[in-house]
Image (tube, rainbow over all chains, first blue to last red):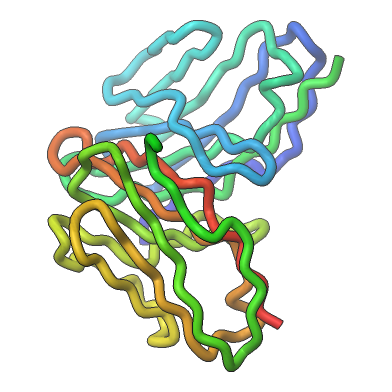
Length: 111
Length: 114
């Protein structure tokens, strides 16, 4: 059984701070890792993908992957109230495999 | 119309009704998915179609019946549902191959079964 674990939160951070969202996974064969953002009442939207160990930066977002520890994280710098959403971690095996989703972490950025 | 569109956005039905959810993708993708999202639970994969062929049926009860007439359209036919089937039903699409795991979701249908 492939599992993807996330703390459901909510994670509350002040505006301007760094928000750190974490995800662990059980399948050592995992090759691809994704972060989706889901606003309340909306559908998930892909914001980051990462495939190699290390960091990947895109604007205020940084994804970090450590395959040895089976750990992937998402950092949001200079957090804004508009970042308040649920962040879903998804893990896949590459190719045509369907990714497995975590339950999501609720992030609240307060002014 | 761009992306993945789903209709209706909201649906209330009785346990004896028959209804259908519709999904259309305008991204040129060749894989389409139905997911169920319930409160406090991970996204649950229900069905997958690749090139119109069903490749995954995740032990979904027969009261849910998918249909994929072409690679752009996907339906979910519902009949004799139970109150526990109330959830957000999401359609998604992707491009088979190296990008197949990048899913593009529709806005979902919020279903309430009375």
